[in-house]
Length: 478
Image (tube, rainbow, N blue to C red; front, side, top):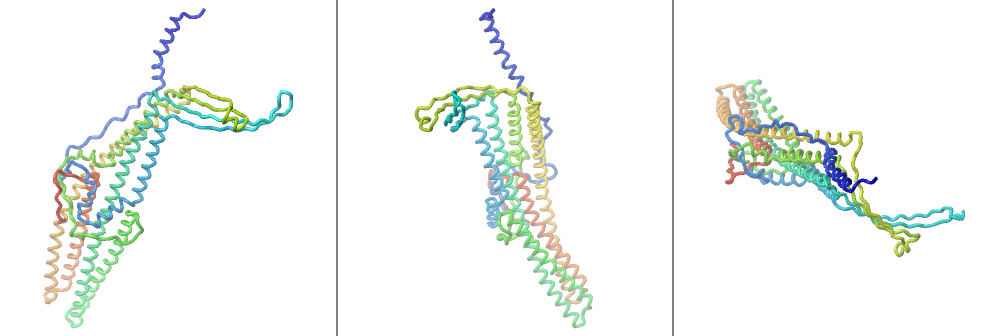
């Protein structure tokens, strides 16, 4: 006996009511993210007197040093560096991935032509040869009721945003490395100039010691000591020249150029040390491109996890085709037999030996690792800023003391030289004064270059620089 119509309606309603439950059973459970362990500090640690102020990032922060040659070098590096060009190429790849993901949301259209020549046995037992041509146009479209395809597109967009932040981080690193390399080069230039001036002074001292030895006023020991000091200073010159060549070649590679000489501009003593103004550490979260990259990587990994979970849901596809069938091309284009079909399909996974669930677990693991990486990047950002602030302050203090020492050793050398020249002391006293003064002046130049380079490191730690409501004041390095 056939079921009553009301019974059929009740059964249909029951199926419709169970539909969402069945679909919910297809979806994998949500993998919760790991617990947060990051604590953002409220202020800078220690006795740091100056900290970066919140504000917009200075895109041309290297101009604060006041050297047109440095500006030109950084500009060239940002245009021609191999790492930056690679990052830009990677951006093109991820833009293409967005186009691939977007295409899945659009209908697909294809055209086909199938010619065939066959020989078969006819109804009377005789062979029959026939030529057939079949052409068709097919269209297909996948519905997205559960948002799986849209989620794939969102994940691709977030991946592109993460890669854009990575490209910004690469540009920041290239600019900072170029600036640091140039400041180090100017420091080596200053040391070379000092070594050559000192070598000329040692040459005069050696000539004086030789004259006094020849007239019997001093011993051969003092002459040998003067010559030894001259040779020691002379050995410093080629050592510095070698270091300068290596630094120039390293800069050339950063510029994307062949190894060769590098144009110079402002001297080390004329380079300005950018001013630093007070601010809060929370501004780092909006400045550093590596933090932005890590944050967007979490969002992309979470979107990919949602897509992996949606793979368990059914996919709905509509298809349609229209074509013709004939025994020759004119018949196909003219009065061939018309063929058409319209249909749809629902495909839901039933058994895959745990493949989809394992893929979701992989995506969840990638999401968790992105969270861990984000926390590590943020902690590293605060550590680098603490180090940069401390380096700027401590190197300035150290530089001031070294400059005072250089003044004192210079006065000691002057007095010792006059005493030796007038016969009141041995050459050993002047020799010690020469060594101490050369060491002190060399140390001043090294510290000045390190002090300026510490500002570059601080710029790098802050994600490109710091801004202020009023123009930042600049002052010469002490």
